[in-house]
Length: 254
Image (cartoon, rainbow, N blue to C red; front, side, top):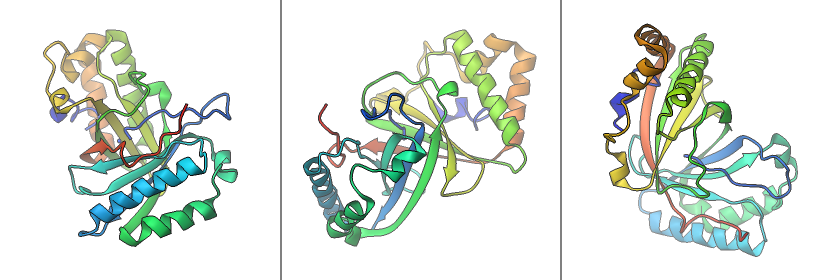
């Protein structure tokens, strides 16, 4: 799908559902470390990440540790390292202690990292339309929205109404919504689209353009109202593509 189909409406890990055996109901928190690697140290960093994944396996860590590489946008080259489906209480009792994890990170990876920023996101399942795939897609298209101060309720009501339209029209597009809850600017929302390959970024002739979907769902007048509401609530919009790196990730055996 081309970006201009969504520009007027919603203008990101991507993210992925990981089950936790210790809980009946997975949480909705995702903790993501944005790791910027020193210019000449990418091969060493990647080798270190493979060692870190092997270390998690040795610890019998039950929690997946997923890694993506940013391949477009201002953050090109930054690696995203994340845990998903967490509750806040899970951070009080990690299977691998924070001290041990940090020590191993510093030992095999830390030397090659120029900067590290941790952010916490809340997955919004009630307004997401995920495909139900069991693993991360090869690529994720990430669109980040900065909402104007005082306009978050307008933005939320707009994207909720859009989700209603996608369900009503059975719009064949999968997407996931996240809200930043800590570690950055308030009012940040992330929209993620999974893509199995580069060809999947092409417009699909059998899928109605975004505005046409809204018109079919609600009529022209309300469709225009939704678009206008979102346009007035969004202060800034950026886009990136991230690529899943299974060779650097840790996926526990089932």
